[in-house]
Amino acid sequence: MADAILYVCTTCRRGTNEDPCPGARLMRAIAAREAPAGVEIRGVECLSACSNGCAVALAAPGKWTYLYGGLDPETHADEILRGAALYAASSDGMPPWRERPEIFRRNVIGRTPPLLPAPPAAAPAAEG
Image (cartoon, rainbow, N blue to C red; front, side, top):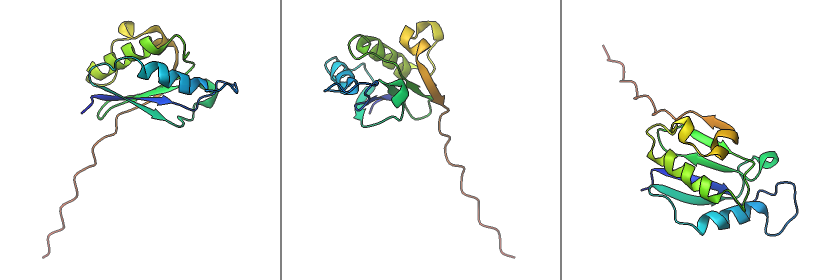
């Protein structure tokens, strides 16, 4: 099982009508490289970051989820995978700031906190 999932928006157009679209080219560039240990790569049809495409997201149980945009399909694949490896190796999804690739420091669109486990079910009230 992977320690993290790298989601790559395959429909990002970055304001162009190119075919294949920039998002599909980014996915192709990432998929052509070896995935870092602990990282599963998944193409998704939309990350709703259209005004910030190309976009990727990193997610894992118990870790912060990050959404990055403004990525270049021709030049950023290696940096994205390096950042994904750091994310997967971190305990909370927040690798040290200075270790993150430049594009991960500058291109954050948003982050969400880890999902918390559901609270335990309340014990039934005693009848009496």
